[in-house]
Length: 296
Image 1 (cartoon, helix red, strand yellow):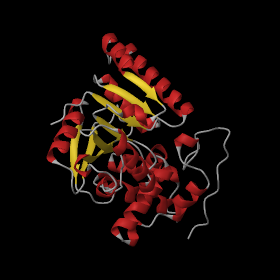
Image 2 (image 1 turned 90 degrees about the horizontal axis):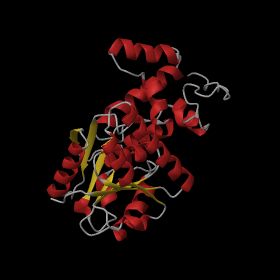
Image 3 (image 1 turned 180 degrees about the horizontal axis):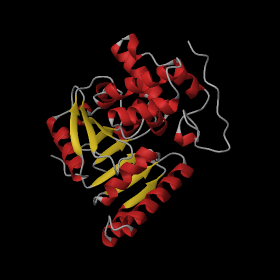
Image 4 (image 1 turned 135 degrees about the horizontal axis):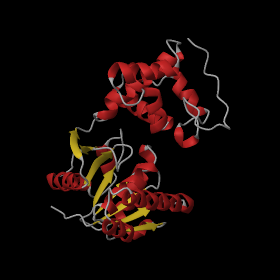
């Protein structure tokens, strides 16, 4: 079993930066890559601020905080990953884009390195198929935000070896996570259940069953969810929710997974959730609310 000492993370968004922070705080050497230098600098500053906050609140010792700062580096070139023990990608939820990245990484990283995907729905087997190391490709799906959420969903592709699985499981446990294991089916466990619920909440809003506030309050107080499904969709990103619903529909072939027209419209209009300042809810005082589609 490979001992993980260094990690490369691809993607400076909320998931990638969260994974990088988690790894650095747990004693790993981390290289965080993003092709957009502005996004990379923003991610590194966010991680720095978060670590300082943890230290100031006593959740992380000063020594561990200083060690995490020392271990974290940014990179604009993927070639900097040539010595890492594992790469975790956390980029856009697109199979074509992820395959292109994995094909590139396969030529760069050392022969023993594991390639892991933070995908929340895409087939690990298909991602592995474009590499020459299919036994060393695995799904490592962190929940958002990675430093806080306790779960990691591990997904084995058709050829993922026991050694790769055990190494990845040990890494997740080192991060203090609880592990669940899924077969390589569309949506895996969490999103196979969660996304249809979110899609159904959009249908309830679309058809005029109730207001967005009442839908979310009903699920929070009626089923003890910490966040309503529409609010959660905004937090995840409506574009991500739509992508996952499309994967579920294409992979499982059931009409119940067809994305709600209202979800499609919001994404088409750029209402992607908190990251854009507006989704189902308006998070920006300067952004006007958009009227929804005519109800069925």
